[in-house]
Amino acid sequence: MSTARRAAALFVVPTLLLSGAVATDASSWAIIGARARPSSPDHAGSLLTPTSRADAAEASNVYVVDPNGRALRRLTSYQGEGQGAFHPSWSPNGKKIVFTEVRCDGCRPEIRVVEVAGGRIRKTTRPIALGYEPSFSPDGKRIAFIGQDGGLFIVGVSGQGRRRIVDPKAGPSEDPAWAPEGNRLLFSRRGANGTAHIHSVNLDGKGLRQLTAGRTSEINPAWSRRSNWIAFARLDQSGLWQIYAMKPNGTGSRKVSDGRGSDTSPAWSADGTRIVFVRTQGDSQGLYVVDANGRGFRRLTRVDRKVSDPAWSPRDGSIVFVMKK
Image (cartoon, rainbow, N blue to C red; front, side):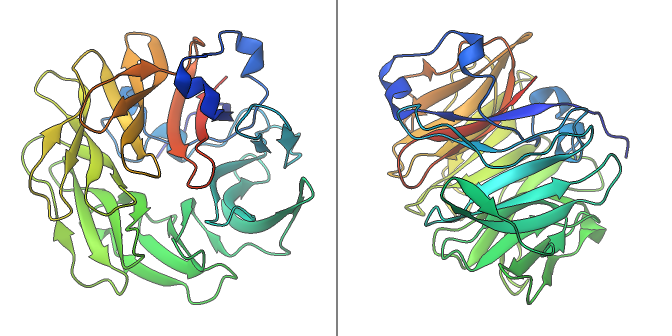
């Protein structure tokens, strides 16, 4: 499929912003990191969105900052056009990062696990796999990712034991998300009719279950760390993407969004009481937080730039997210 070249930035929102002290100076955000990933609602017609498979027109780099917005550190140093680190994901103990590296325009996407020590990355000598959207397992020993063919895979952190979990013949996979117990994976898959639905599967590829159904699409599944709810984005009858939550067996679906924008990319707080997500209203896009019961909507970002893919830190309450330049 064709890809669009876009630059993206990875940010960390300090915990203090959740109390209402929202930064408004664009320059205070633009320096904190880089990556590109789906799923912006303007590309909702395809699970494999341009940004999910795109290299950047400019170099993309990963940074880390503490929850108070201080001690900013640049972890990668890509400089050339088309180079960059994409889809970074922290290990549970915060000592490693997994990401997709693209070393040139048109180069293959290499998944690498690196150690972060003393503010610097100790790079592995070889990639552990080729693909996109790597995600650490809860025990930090395995990584789920999407292969170049659209299949769902698992591999050990050293590159050993690569296994295909879901074949792409029934439709490409997207959005891999681990169950907190580490025994199942959630993912989105689009069928022959073009409608995307959420599935779960055991790590041996057995026990495949379709959790959502109907004429509308559901994407971006996210398992709460207490295992009692799954948040996801559904294309509502209004034509807007809305955040919903359902039980792990696919029942008890309830709406979290308030219908005031198109909402995607939900992610749970560590205690399971709040959800961060991306809201689009016309040409404006921002990062929001809402209580899990659908109350207390708050906007975190005030910068007029495209944002996507927020993730709540399991350690310190900070939020990482993508912003396109």
